Amino acid sequence: METFNFSVPQDITVGKGSLSKLPEIAKKLGGKHALIISGPHLEKMGLVKKAADYLASVDIKADTFTDIEANPSVATVEKATAKYLESGADFIVAFGGGSPMDVAKAVGVVAKYCLLYTSPSPRDTR
Image (cartoon, rainbow, N blue to C red):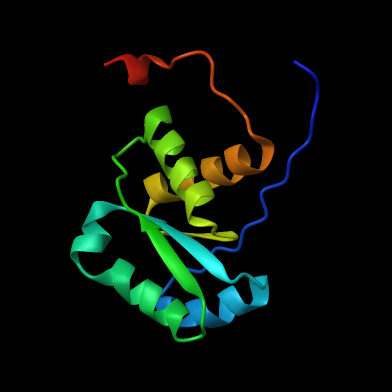
């Protein structure tokens, strides 16, 4: 494998009222279309829709990917990457805990650098 460098710039906002800051943060990124990557629990609570609504309030389109399990698999990253590419999104909002954050970072790298996973993890062969 040839040597290469990659950068995954990210801003992480945590705490009470953080969701209401999403439009301002998204505007600073300059994006027009987000993919919100989150988990099924926040979706069931209506918070993923609320995040999408906040983005819509500043004319930013949002698609969502919430099919994320604990300790996400390579297959989940592949599905989320496909959703990102198919949606036409130009930035990612990772919303939730560690699993959505992990998937979002992996999608950012895979989508930008077109990396292919060729050696299965023991977790993916269960």
